[in-house]
Length: 289
Image 1 (cartoon, rainbow, N blue to C red):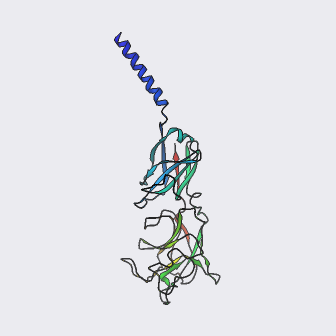
Image 2 (image 1 turned 45 degrees about the vertical axis):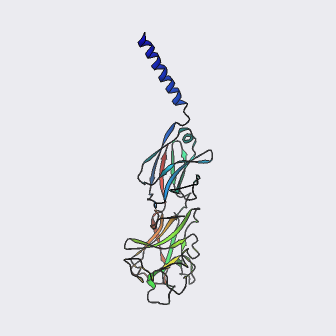
Image 3 (image 1 turned 180 degrees about the vertical axis):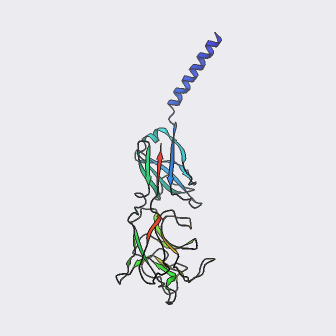
């Protein structure tokens, strides 16, 4: 008799536990991220995932490691109802519960998977192109013209914008670079290809004869970083256009680099040179629920 009563109580307990688990509104499911091409951010920023549920963003958690796959436990009902996944860049100490403007990847769920990419949320760089010239217009010395790079096209006789790039989404800026023996040195950040860049008036590298033409670019004439000597010769160096988070707390180029070109050893000064495709024109990934 005692054995029968014990078994009955045990069975009742199992039934009760099962019902309680089914009715638990906080029951979770797994969300798995398999993302390609991301690079580690500076120490003050993290990546944060979001699912869009009934038109509103719901955080799936933050991460700084760029090794994948990564899995997060998400409210089961919310994850089931999610229509879209978005990845943003956020301050590591973030008082704002909403997503930042700097969104990296996005894609709609189709069944239990979302193919995410950067094309629609950052910009589509598939048709991007660029030209630049070697010149040093910010000094009065015509003996070091190969020490400056300017993203303009003067092949018609009058300068015009040398870069053909899409307008970026909020939270992003372009940045030019020259890579000196593995060390990238900025030419400045910009959003408009037909205006001077953001550091035109404050650059420590330019000469003392003015800010230069009204296009992005830089003269490497003075105040060289440790290990480098300015003026220099940019022939054989690599010129890069990257897409940077804004704000950006990393001194290194971000992973998106739509244009790049090694300056030919026989390049002529003051002559437009065509850029090629950069190493990373888009970021992609698969998000599974």
